[in-house]
Structure formats: C-alpha cells, structure tokens
Length: 452
Ligand code: PLP
Picture 1 (tube, rainbow, N blue to C red):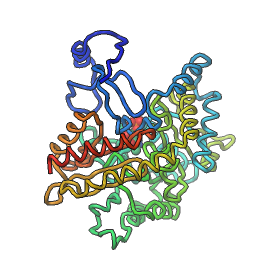
Picture 2 (picture 1 turned 90 degrees about the vertical axis):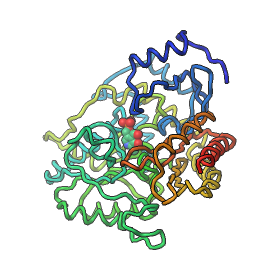
Picture 3 (picture 1 turned 180 degrees about the vertical axis):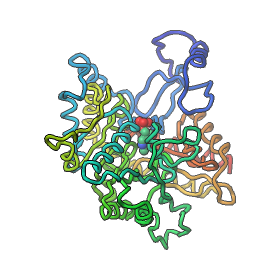
Picture 4 (picture 1 turned 45 degrees about the vertical axis):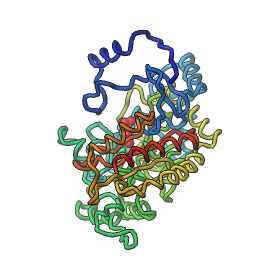
C-alpha cells in the first residue's frame, strides 16, 4: 500500500457520497462502493486509499501499452498547444500521419474514417456498406449478418449487430436488418460436433443464411476475429477464410471488428492477420490510443472508397461527427503506436499469451474449470457446474471478489445470455511481467480451489 497524493483533497467517504449522489456508473448494477482510482503505472492502478491493483483486464481490454506513459502525455500536451481542434471536414497532420501508419499496420490499401468509439466505428461501417451497394446498382442490399454472443457496441445499430439477448431486451427494437448465426463455439458446438469431427458448419451456415435471406438483400457480414466480450470464443483455423470466400461469392462485404483484437492483442497487429484474410472494412478503437484518449476508425478498402468519389454525383459519404479524428487523439495514437513498435510489444504480447496459457494450465485440473481459451494475450476461463452446465453467476462473482481482495482485477463475460455469466477474462497490458502473471494465476487458482 502506497500513500497517494490527493490532488483534490477530501476524505474517501466524502468522495463516495458524492459519487453516489451524482455519478451513474456504466453497466455495473448499483455499484455503491466503486474503486476511485487516482493513478496508474505499468500494469498497476492505485485507488484513493493507496491500494494497488494489478489491472489484469487493461481496463476494458484497452490500455495495451500500460499506464503512466509520459511520452503519450507529452504528445497530447504539445498537440493541445499547437492545435486543439479542426473538424475532419478539413485535415491536420496527425490525422494524415495516423491514416498512413494504419495502412502499414493493415498491410493493405485503406481509406480511414475517424470517429470516437468502437460503437461509432461500427455504425460508420454499416452506413458505408449500405451506401456502397446503393450507388453500386444494388440498393436492396441492406441486411447484416452477425453472430450470437457477439458484442459490437451500445448504440442502436451496433447493439442490433450484437448477439447477446440480455443486453438488448429492454431497448428493442434496435437497428433494423440484423440477423445472427450460431457462433464457432467449439467447447459447446452448436452443431453437436466434437473437435475431431468438425464439419465447419458454423462457417458454411453463412451460405445458407445468405441464400435464405436472398443474396440481393445482404449488405455485409460483421465479425470479430474471435468473439472476445461474449466468451472468448476462438474459431477453428479455417473459419474466417471460409466465411470470406462465401461473402465474396455472393457479393457480401466482410466487416471485421478489431476493436479489441487490434493493435497487438491477438499477437499480430490485427486479429484477422492470424487467419489470412483481407477484410473489406476494418473497425478499430480501444488499443489504437491504449485508451489515453478517445478515438476510433473505420478503414475501408481503397477501391470501395473510390465509388464515393464519382464526379458529378451525390456519392460522398454524408456523415460527420464533431470529435472524430480530434488532433490530440490522433497525436496520442501516433505516440502509442510508436511505443508498440519501438518496444516490440506486439510480439511480446504473443509471447506473453503463451506464457499466461502455461501458467493457467493447472486450473484445468479443477472440476469447476471446463475450458481455457487464449487468443494472443487474451484469455477466457470457462467455469462449469458438476454436470457441465455453465457455472452459476454467484460463483463467478465470488472468484472476481477473491481476486480483487488479492489486488488482481480480472473480468467476466456476464449476462450475455441468461445462464451464461461463466467465463472469466484476463487481458493484461503488454508490459506485464512474468512475476505479475504468476500473481494472476496464483490468485485465480486459490479462488477456484476454495470453491471446487
Ligand atoms: N466492438 C467490440 C468488439 C467491443 O468489444 C466493443 C466494446 O467493448 C465495441 C465494439 C464498442 O466499443 P465502444 O465501447 O468504444 O463503443
């Protein structure tokens, strides 16, 4: 426990009282005792009491380069002094440099549309896909196909794409035209297969659905390389390529949501690079700035973009947002990407992923642990009851509380479908040390043993 400076003064009770009075917390039900964080360094954050927590979820899968990076703070300061704002109807140097850098990272030719959040980036992708078909002589192509258990954001369209009933029920009807197919969930294969007899029906079903819907009505498929927030669902190796082939056969665009998987989390620059596909549209956010500033982007294949520039037509993309591509956020993203490159953090994330997997392997001996799934430096631990059904939510909450007591913040994929709150998630910053991974694994093992 380190005593932290209190820049604003006041006692902890006073802060909690004000928090309870004024602040509406995101999603966590009735959180009357939130951690009030005051500082961060590397993989650790410190609260008002000076208690340190290992941030084993990188916040919400986003602080990839770790906390407390002076050079990112400096870049924001310099940009604010030089130019705080100009709308993206015009341009500025950080946006141009960042768009160029993103093309390198994507290993293809893309035009970059900047927004603020992952949800925004997906909304932009949906609009671009519809407009593309519209002005390409196929105006009836308006539907999107997503997957059950997927999460694509909180706004009405992005939530429409999301395949998690519990997040949607009270807000429906949502964005129109989204249908869902079963996820490539090998541990509980929706097609009743086991791993040795996989027929890849989770991929080939796209062809059936496109034909049932009518290919002339389908605009795009959207998917994450792995479903992260819906249970760390890692597909068979040929899954994504098979889906892309089907999309190409039927003139359907492939939108890949890299909001979590991008920027090294997958062990490659982008998650889809693990599967040998070249998406038509890529959306990204979180790790682009390591969450030091809000920023997202929708990268669109350059040849698709050209159809938005037909001379003498009204083909431009009729979309603007005030903060998207903010110069400070773009400058922060550039500083963040420079750190990732200079410190080889993408390959480090890959190595750390294998190390974490090894350290968690002993968990599989516990009857409560059904499966462990890793993708790069992100991991899901599926907890089960004795009969193999998903572990009850109270047990999962016990594990989270026990780890928090040890000073380790891990996550869970909760409430995606009633009865499925049973996947623990771990996704630490890329600067996490082996010793810190031992702390995470040790704390989890102790918590689960006490319940087993
Ligand atoms: N897409 C994915 C895969 C996500 O995990 C998230 C957020 O967690 C989003 C989109 C939405 O991003 P945001 O919360 O920035 O709107």
